[in-house]
Image 1 (tube, helix red, strand yellow):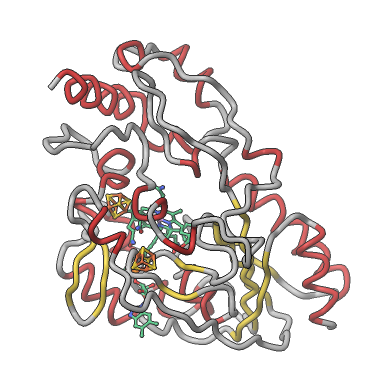
Image 2 (cartoon, rainbow, N blue to C red):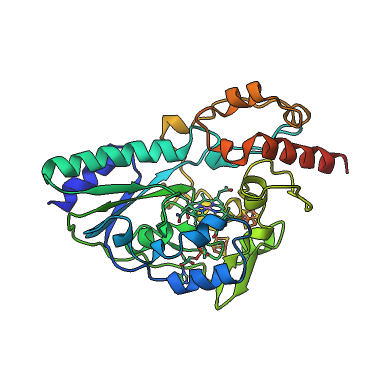
Amino acid sequence: MDEEALKLRALDLGFDTVGVCDAKPAPHHDFYKRWLARGHHGTMDYLESHLPLKEHPENLLPGVRSVIAVTLNYNQPNPPQPGRPRIARYALGRDYHKVLRGKLKALSRWIEEAHPGAQCRPCVDSAPIFERDYANLAGLGWFGKNTMLIDSHRGSWFFIGVLLTTVPFEADAPAVGGCGTCTRCIEACPTGAIVFEDGRWQIDARRCVSYLTIEHRGEIHTDTHGWTFGCDVCQEVCPFNQPRESQPLRAAMTREPDFQPRHSWPSLAEVAELDEGKWEELTQGSAIRRTRLDGMRRNARVNVRQEKA
Ligand code: B12
Ligand code: SF4
Ligand code: SF4
């Protein structure tokens, strides 16, 4: 099938970039294993139980030949509002799992119509696959010291989705690039979560504000530096995310209507005491649900305490 047609279809569906790589074994599975062995995943036990499945996309779709990787920009202005919850940009609008999955399903249908008998499997975030690695192999970006996948022209404010398919498409070349001598994210990270070990910069999730406010259960004993859900500091400071005249796509705003903010949140003091009904209303169809009501209340309490200190 014509790769050109596939890519045009993906762009038509609203994705910002698309690339293809062969369905080969995960290139950095051993590094990931050592990252887990160091305990950097904290209590994200699902990452450990996914370990064997992550070795090869064949484990997710028998007969898979190609991995189609896509990106979708979620960037939008997000100035801090004193006294209100500080929510990372990726979670301001509709849950990205739903948005990307819907578009990837439409792409699957298109492939399956052209190739009767073909099989496809969309993966967004929660499937056991190294999304950044396959997106890198498909030419969509390289690894920054903050571990984000960075597109030299656009920056890193994008989600990644992958579509596994039994149809063989011609592969693109992997993306190349690098941070050079820059260390801005490492200096700016409020909790020192970007650490150099095992020959690479990586995140010790146990210190990362994003992990603490979203994935961690139980009390938070450290400062979350004003963040109530997620954290964007290591992207906000990255030079690849600063607007630049010679790079018109860099730091561009999202074109996805579903990512527009859905609600205006009540004050931190109110969020700290939020009831079930209001929580349901505020988080319907939103990725914020991941932290659960008790997590969001806890995060707001931490913010209130820190504002007073
Ligand atoms: C677990 C997880 C987290 C954890 C851990 C983050 C981390 N950096 O590992 C926590 C909760 C902290 C987190 C936070 C965030 N996350 Co997150 N997360 C994931 C998830 C589910 C798995 C990531 C993973 O495998 N980590 C394990 C470690 C070992 O990965 P790593 O350090 O990046 O190492 C890889 C590379 O360095 C490479 N590598 C290793 N050795 C070598 C050697 C060479 C030479 C090279 C070139 C490469 C290489 O291979 C390694 C394995 O993949 C992915 C979705 C998915 N299924 O992939 C989303 C994902 C990475 N997250 C995403 C986002 C948006 C975020 C946040 C921005 C959300 C927020 N605002 O709060 C933050 C950013 C924090 C940060 N700086 O990473 C996006 C990233 C998009 C992008 N442009 O990169 C993803 C891809 C989800 C998606 N579908 O869009 N996340
Ligand atoms: S998301 Fe925040 S806490 Fe986590 S590594 Fe980036 S700057 Fe540090
Ligand atoms: S801030 Fe600098 S070091 Fe960090 S990811 Fe961006 S370019 Fe790389």
